View (cartoon, rainbow, N blue to C red):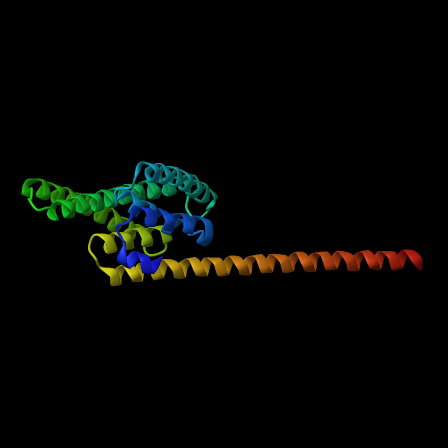
Length: 216
């Protein structure tokens, strides 16, 4: 898939295949969402548009269930955070779409400068909105939110072409996820050990009571 992207990065069908791959095998919801957004921006067919709609709908349901199960944030703060993230990602998507349209008209033989400048102006407005929201969230939450790090990194990569900063944010998000997974594994192991010891102590107590009953 990586090799194919280098030569056909504008193929909507390929992006849809990547989204299905992440949904079925890697279980990476973030990369699945990115692939679906890339598919939408590369002029998909009617069937592909319907598949993107259905997959995004399923992804929203999974994300909503995952968010509801998390206990990291209080209710009010969690709603405000998710609302701001959604606004920033929406502005990011608009900026990418306007830039794509501007590049499309720039590639034509007869340039429509007025339309091109209109698209570029709208892209700048959307980009500034997304950047401002992400900056505000970074000040409030720092670098502790995996979702925020990946969303901000995507903006830096897609709009500013700052691949180094984007990669640093993605790596930080991956490190946080790995740490959380490791801590969760240790917690389960400790809990299993506690249950084992508790069960073993009950067996010993039962054996002691049986021995006392026999020799009484």
